[in-house]
Length: 504
Ligand code: MV4
Image: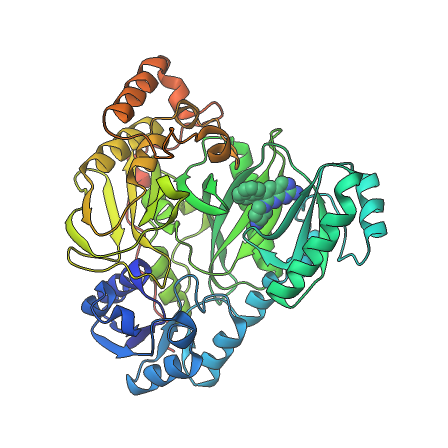
């Protein structure tokens, strides 16, 4: 096993990885920019190395500085977390060339899944359904028009190098076609240095449902069920849950099998996620693969008992997966709210600053993965995440009740604003309570009041009470398509055995 892991990241995910290291008896090495000298991850790690000025390009994205810190600290492996270097194949290769272990997928898998068109072709060839559209990249408006004629409007024009909502345009009819094609192509060229694009049929009422997979170096691959991630704002996830209230047990099994097939097709190793777009008729299509640990991984951990970060570390050390597919079950329901220093009253602009008083929620079923403490600063330079508030309940109703209760306990004051009231609003929205939503939920349902603020205080209380009063049928709150999960099977709730370690 590793002796010392360098964590090429900051904030809550760095703290999460430090915790996994400590539980495994591995020393952790933090890196920090000038803006993060007093950050929680620096305080929590066993060792810490400065890597440069506050802007990420000069510190957390500075390959030479990070590798130098790994060398000075005598680390034997590097964990990239999410964001930053996590999906940069070139960085992963540099880590390996420096004689260190990369705690992540093979660089070739990162690269192949990073090209959305190559990924689409590869998945089609592997028998994984992709959204109907162009087989490869297109060059001209005439080619787009021909595809559109075949599959029908509306369509989506997507940049090959895009992903996560970048380089993406909706086209209603052939009138808008020419201008959209030009815009996508020129924007993709300037943002990604790659103007290639492809076309898909637009799926109405789409849901974003993703499947977590884990693969070891010995050819064993399992899926760890799904996460429902449709509650997004400008392609940023806001609330995630597992199970999805929308899918049936049969679909869950099929999506899991397809996700494993997708991962096998790129010889995947480590933790990864297959994203699906699911339409109103419950057809599901491959969208993208994320070749990293994801922000929302805790909801999977809470319903399956699998420690995904620990699994990544043990897999990178050469361990075999200690379980088979049949050993894995979902138990109960988990929901995550991403708590951000941002101002819903000002169009969700980042509103970071110094935290004065802070009370984190706790109690039954509550997990709060935070990157800050009272007196700490949420820096202006990075993603202004404060914490991920995650709850577990025996069913969706209890999980929502607990999330409301936990959001009520959360107190934060100081020179910053938060989206706590926005989450309190979501947790009282009748559509959300019924599990009746798609990726356009926030656009459709969130109408800030006159001064643009999220409802709060008495106004929020009134919405809250009305939502509960309107919700007479308790079954509704589990979502129309919700399947009972294995809540009653106490035997399923045993801890997953330790990995059998192999000599490196
Ligand atoms: C789509 C779609 C509908 N039809 N593709 C947005 C992010 C990118 N990864 C894919 N996205 C979408 N692709 C087709 N053919 C709707 C979206 C979409 C979306 C997808 C996932 C999560 C949130 C979303 C919000 C708006 C649109």
